[in-house]
Image (tube, rainbow, N blue to C red; front, side, top):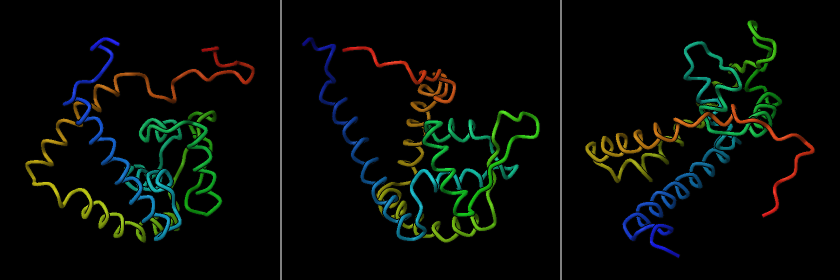
Length: 170
């Protein structure tokens, strides 16, 4: 293989460090959410996004795009949250093809119950190792990377494969 097909040592170190930190943090957060509130990471993100929404509700496609989550995965997680009484889903008033998701009082209570532990895990594992200058640098750098990645169409806009479509042979 040519050098163009490999990452150099500095690139590889940065990539592996980012992947490892992300995996370790995600594992600890998932564990805390399960213990404190019986929630998965995506379920917590759905509740947190809804709580942060000025209107108190969001369209499913906007949630999927914001969370970078598949439509089917989000539908499954939303169904679990609805079954638990933490959210409601209803057709949008202005477009019956769209589904609007809203946080219930029980959902707000569950979010409030898991949030202190969530903050503690994030503070202990990530933020306590960083100075304010470090946080500003990481926010700027990762924001730039995120913005570049977000120039591609959102996953919810990607065409769906038909049920009869097969993956191409490799």
